[in-house]
Image 1: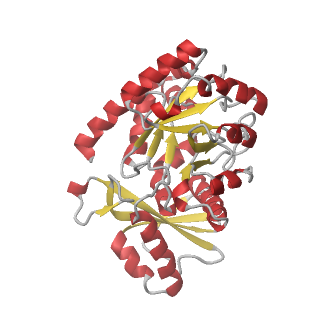
Image 2: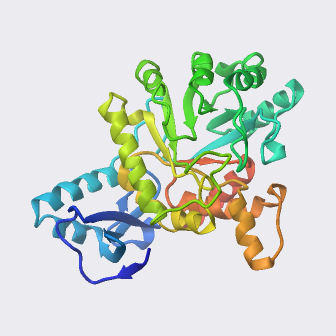
Amino acid sequence: MKVISTDDIILPLSTENLKTYVIPILGNKKNLKLPTKLAGGWRFFEDVVILQKNKNRIFKKILNFNEFLELSNRCKISKKISDEIYFNLLSKRESNINLNFSKCNLMSILNFSPDSFFNASIVENLQSLTKQIEKLKLQEADIVDIGAESSRPGAKKISSKEEIRRLKLFFDNIDVGQLNLKLSLDSRNFKTVSSFVDYGILIINDITGFKDKKFLDLLLNKNISIIIMHMQNNPEKMQENPLYEFPVIDIYEFFKEKTKFLLDNGVKKSQIIIDPGFGFGKNKNHNLNLLNYFPLFHSLGFPICAGLSRKSLIDNIYKDKYKSDISPNQRLSGSLSLQNIAFLNGAQIIRTHDIFEVQQSFACLEEVYI
């Protein structure tokens, strides 16, 4: 879909044929005249990109945020929409599990699946698990995400029985209370999650984007959060010709619908985290569209998790330029580059295989850009 630069904003902001989207242009507080803090966090903005989708065209204009608000005040419908966007962009992200979303949280990864796409993250036995846990303690990660079913492109679904069997290595041997970090379970299976929900799990990391409504019961009755990730199709077929009109807008609307359903059914806003799902049913251009317009998701008012670590997007970019493939083991530099972009775009959680390297990279960015 073509993006057309324009000098005009169409009012009202939302009609049957028109929808308006607001993207903060994030920058260094010291370089802005009237900096506005994003989501009570570490990034600031004063200007915004306005995207207006009218049927099969998208119009784009850059405005000072206050100017946008003043224009919107001229119309009752527009004012209501702009007031909601204003609140979502500025309000501090709350967490029912005491995560601090005024900073970027690092989520480490432990895979109990033998066919994970990145071998170094695989836990093969108790000795391997103990070594990984000791490493995590030294690195001071904020969250550890454990999973036992591979979701790499082409991966086949396994039974809950097998998934539970694999995860028992962790739950039978690790005292979660002694980890000093939040425990996330990467599973799309209700039976698996419900089997371990009383063993210290604080986050359900659901790659299906809350497809199974049985998770609602857990959210209403347990003090846990959920990461709703966007995925087109399923891991086995998700890379078979994925299609979007304009990826970031399509996925924004997906989250708007999903989060409304959860809130309408009694889930607290502080329980919800969103993840655009880089690489899940998205080709190179789709992923780059999400990166280029990533700050749009802040307009929804929820914490954002980004998973870019060692993904095939890095191979796609490198191969287009240098005509050769690179394996996941060779993608550290590309991972750091893309994760830096997500960090500067205000992502509140970065899911990564490389905690130590990301900590270094972010510390250097903070000295220069924050």
